Amino acid sequence: MAVAEIGQCLGLVLLLGLIGGCGGKKPGNGMVPVSGVLEVDGQPAVGVVIELHPQSNAPSLAKGITSDGGRFEISTLTQGDGVKPGTYDVTFVWSEFNIVTRSQEGDRLNGHYAKPDKSSVQWIVPEGNAWDAGTVELSSKK
Image (cartoon, rainbow, N blue to C red):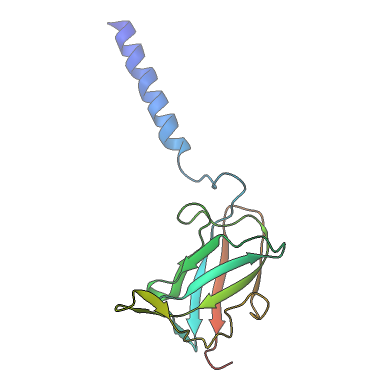
């Protein structure tokens, strides 16, 4: 009976160790979760596609889309995993879905932030557990 009780205690300790080890870890591969809020003309904007373009001219893989309240999180490989630390030109496109053609059309930001070399927004994502981009203010009138 004593051996069974010891086995149960060891199993419980192992289980608690696994559960305790699951929280608070930053994503692997040096990724830094990035989040924030986007406002256009002083109002939260829903449905804006955000894309981070590395300065190295490598293809952009990091994207996000704003949700209720203009909140966003950037994803590269998996939902919310973030990006590698570095400097990024950030683009924003606020199109509308055409249900007939089943495609995105237009840009309510008038293309002012649609190209990496034209966008005035640049982020320097530092190493760490997470980076808050804060509230990003854009203008549709620019």
